[in-house]
Image (cartoon, rainbow, N blue to C red; front, side):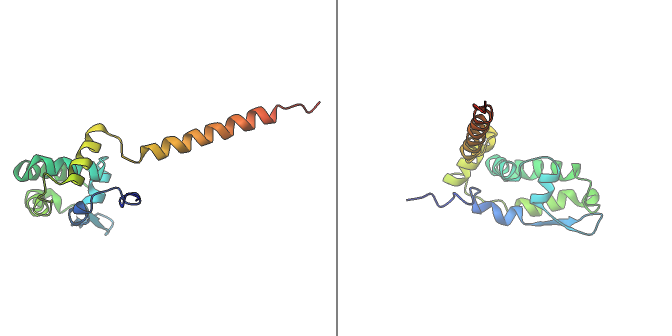
Amino acid sequence: MADNNVLNPHPPEFDRFLQAYVGEDRNGYAVTVLSTLARLGLDPWNETAELVMLGHDAAQARLGTLLARFRDVPALASDHGKIARDLSELLPEGRASGSLKRAASTGAHGRPGGSGAIWAVFAIIFVLFQMFMVGGSGSGE
């Protein structure tokens, strides 16, 4: 039977946290935790897995530090501590959950579980390129 997470390899336990509202950016757009982490150059799912594994207090402190670095939402300048506290309440509690451990180990190794598909695509492109090069220099004499 096929893995249920093939199309969505990210733990569903992270959704409530990642989709939480952080504030409004300077252009008037709603900013979520997911977009905040992405704009900071972090992988949102890996960072969330790391926060979960830290535990509540350490996660709240780490999240506060990240929000303090984020300058796109003006309201965070004065309220990043309170917002970090509120957002940390949305992190899943299941430290021992299999999907949370899998996400954390994926984040620690820096490569997603679906990277095999990417390599397969590269291999196919390489083979097609080689076939084109060999076939293109054929005997047209």
